[in-house]
Length: 394
Picture 1 (spheres, rainbow, N blue to C red):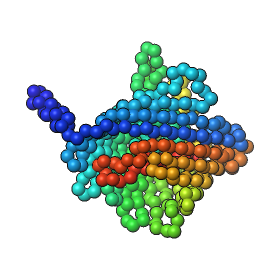
Picture 2: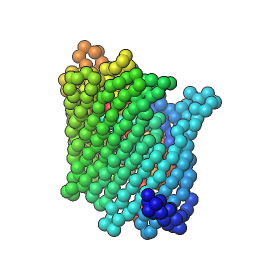
Picture 3: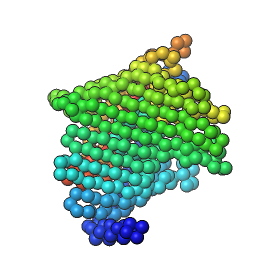
Picture 4: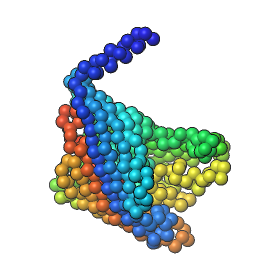
């Protein structure tokens, strides 16, 4: 025990003797998204407008250890305003941001990054989770992960693993609050020329509350291949993936449900204009949405994804989203996106819903000084953290 304490003191003194600098960031996010789904009667998404802004100032220290390892500690706060809903009270102040970050560069060109604490979702490849894993509006409102993130990248591979802990088990004052955690992974492997293997996965554990003593498991794997050849276009990519799920409500004793499907994305762009189409064919990926326990419906607490994947079909069906995007670049620290998305899908029998379900208009802005500064461990590689119009799913 004494040896461990002595070692800890030595490490602390070594870090204090290392090069230290003030570390800070200011990030501003603005989003206006108008959803018009009256044609589908709100069966998949309601008609509404998300109009909100967020300012996240952060400050801390950056410690350099040797020539290729950096330690970062930051603290900050989310200032969030839902336009039209502010009443002048304390709702302007959101979550506290508090995290430690490590960056290390290796001689083979690989870079390892790790983060622990409460930190922005943009540290992940957030864009890849939007759709079957996470709804983009939910990500915008709930901007932070509470847990850990590990990332590794080199010339051919990118991989990340994250733990988010969105729910602590309730108490006498919160008897229905469930303990919940989600493990997320995303990555790609460029295995041959223009071809890459893609994966994205989630393991969500929807656990007990003091008055709800049951557990539901919800796991998903999104696995496929992409093709991105060199062309005269600025962007050209095609991918196809399978979606496999494992869902088990343990209190029913009826065994697991295994809904599955496939997705395909086609994206091309030139001169800051992009056309993207996403297609889904498969089962209803939210079969337990209307189920519940103790009179409490699972609903959106169990399923974080876009509600279009709750197809309301007993057999496989299709859905499609076509997006037109304009994403001008006004510098490394300021990104804009103007987008229009048109939603289509196979109507449930005798529902009277047309194939064209509705459309949305979006304007998004991100001002982020972190994107202007190079990553210390990545030897000056640029960080572009903005993902534009994130909801191209359904």
